[in-house]
Structure formats: C-alpha cells, structure tokens
Image 1 (cartoon, one colour):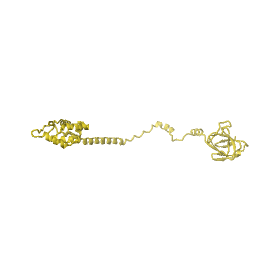
Image 2 (cartoon, helix red, strand yellow):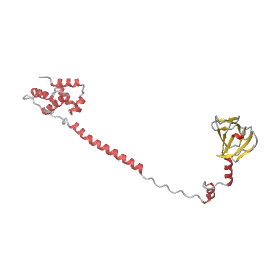
Image 3 (cartoon, rainbow, N blue to C red):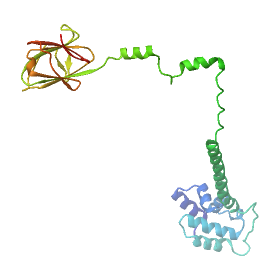
Image 4 (cartoon, helix red, strand yellow):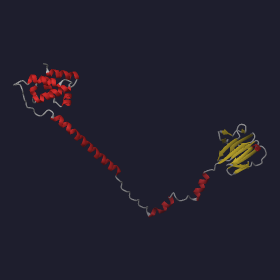
Length: 264
C-alpha cells in the first residue's frame, strides 16, 4: 500500500513540472490534478474518470499508471464507498475544442493574407490612363518657336565665332640622326618653354642625342619657335608629314604652325 496523492505530487515536483503544464499535456483540468494529489476523489466525476485520470497522470510523470489504478480500486472501490459526484462539464471538452479550432484559424489567416496580396498585385499592375496630348502652341508664338528650334542651323556669325574660338592642334616630330642642340619656345624666342612628350622641357635648351634619345614629340596650338644648332642632323615632321627645313644657315630658327614651317 502507498499514498497515491503524495506519490504523484513528489514525482511532479522532482520533474519541476507545474500544474498548468500537466493540464496542457494530459488535458486534465488543474482542479482535478490537485484533487488527485490531495486524494479528494469525491471532487472527480466518478470512478471511471478517476481511473482514467490516474493512469494518464502517472504515465505522464513516468510512473506505472496501472499500479496507481490498482491501488485506487483496492482502497476506494470497496462496497458502499463508490461515488458518482456530478461535474459541470467533461474535463476533456475544452482542450479538444481548442485544438480543433486551431486549423480553422490558420486557414482564415492564410485566406486573409492571400486576399491582401491579390489587392496589392492588382494595384501595382493596373494600367495607367494615357496622358492627353499637349495642346499646340498659340499662333502668336510660331515665330518665337521657329527662332529657338535647336534643329535649325546656326547663323554664319555663330559658325565663324565657333571656328575662331577653337584653335587647331598640330603635332611636331623631331628625329635626330646625329647629336643636335635645340630649343623650343611658344610664340617667340623669349616665350615660355615647350614641354615635349615625356615631360622634357625644351625652353632652356636640350641636346637630342640618338645614343640616348633619338626622337621628340611636341603637341601645340600656339606657334612654336624652334632653334636648331645642327639642322642637318634633324628630320622634321608636321602632322605626320615630312617637312623640308628651310635653308637658313647654321644654326637655324624656324617658326612652326599648323599651316607649315617658315624661317623665323
């Protein structure tokens, strides 16, 4: 013989389980669980429910449910001690009804989400109404529109101004067959020094030696004054074409523009 109620309570406390957790897992109301632990079996609906609750509760706690049922039968179902106290409702009705309603709630939620998604899709992809054509300008503005049309060719004065404001670029190539001293300035012999390709400053004078460097390239839009110490050792090209150096003795001073080479 053993104590049914105290054995159940001690097993539950060892597992660290609360009464609410027992109700959630066994679908037995908390008041009936407490009645089992207090051995107040008159609170329960009747012997049949009591045996079922004892078996479910004991099995949940990892105990031998049949052992608790047998102990209850031997102690409390002797002749004259059977009881059948009425209860307000069946203990399993509320948990079962709650579980049955959960799938319905899920379906209602999914249907609502689908309806919202459909409305958003229709609003995003609804075709927009075509804009009404712009009214033609009034007759009084025809002349002004014609004057400001960007498709019209510019006047002769505008074309001339554009041509003057954009100076022509020309390219000079100097190739040495033997060492030659040279100096290049802009506009005049006292002008700023010319900077050749590679960052070589020709304004202070430079000796072009084939043993070190055989070729210099100059790019300019301003006339270049070129002084050559030995003109016969230099080949001059203007815009990719060979140019004959005008005979001016030695040394020679040349004025080079986009149009050609002349003696300075």
